[in-house]
Length: 205
Length: 205
DNA sequence: AATCCCGGAGAACAGTTGTTAACTGCATGG
DNA sequence: CCATGCAGTTAACAACTGTTCTCCGGGATT
Image (cartoon, rainbow over all chains, first blue to last red; front, side, top):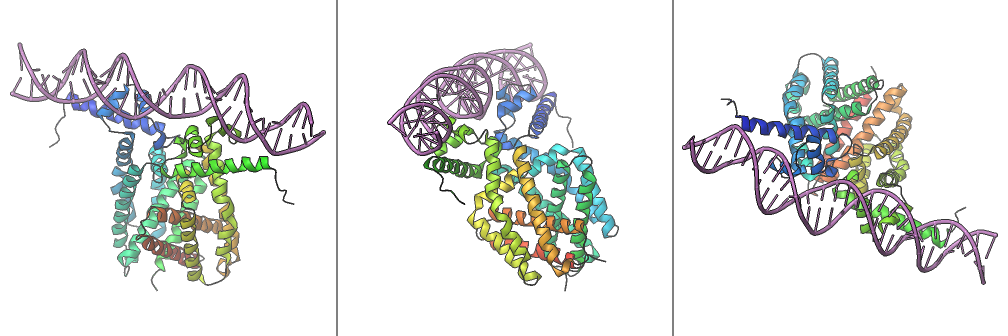
């Protein structure tokens, strides 16, 4: 099934990845709408025109980055949310998972948080779509919990969205926090989710 | 107390305001980090060098925009949160206030949401500071409520932050929503805040 | 072995950018 | 009423931008 793709295509994918990496690094201190094509090619060490062999524009580079940053994450979080354990345990595990992910891929998080409301429409749309899929998956995971008995679809979706937004904000806050502040951020995020979880238990009248 | 300031300074403030307005308009479809000095002066209809008479750089223009967008808002929301009425009523009034503000100053909201995680450090810091002050004010307003009896400061601050973030996200969602989607956004936001409010009531063990 | 395909290089294009210096006109304060 | 201060102008600078066209070399295909 998986062809060992030729030297040619392998090299192409390699430089393509180099573009993605270089762009991600440059985007740590600026937004996508100010990222120049030449700037990226310079960082990769390649001629400006080579860029067009891979992306029509920097906006499409951005869309590719969205895939890279969020595409692989789906199963991970959904799995955590649906894992066994009581509420508090699940919350702590989720927050810890977020913290680890931030430590491992800080540039990805920064990029998503920044461009979610950024100036490039195409990228905003791509992020919104991924987060919507994300929310839907969290919703079906939440639906498995016994606490969700009697909940209608709309309310479940609302809760899932609340959780997803909370996760993203926590991740973003961790990025901006100094090492000694991080514990405080984690504790605050945990308390937030705990409060939401309490609200969830008493939602049905 | 209020001097009728001379023709000179009046004209200066007038063009300064023109800079702010033009920049805000341009920032609807791009981020501050890509906003050019010449771009702004062109929009105002003034020579590029005139810019320096008012701001050292576009980043400082951004900081001034933060003041304009968030500076006046303090008393408004705090007043709403501390207003009388039961929980649900207060929530609906708050959401409605947000919706009206978005309708009235959409560009301001867009700017804040975009640059909160944007690529310009100075502006991010300015927004963070304003939102922190904001959160503190909401906290003292929440402290007045009878439901807050027995709450410690940390938890109150946590709740206030949750509310503030929720308000900003709601405002941002309203911006991206088409006219016919807006009611749905408002209802979803209301349910979110209701759930948080329920969690609040059952927070103390 | 001869051919095609295609990722990348090179050069050139018209515009744009931020910043400098030296100027002009006019409201202002003595 | 005159001298000063200062918002805004003009001109010029080197550096940078995205995009086009032409070319090259070597893996892929037959």
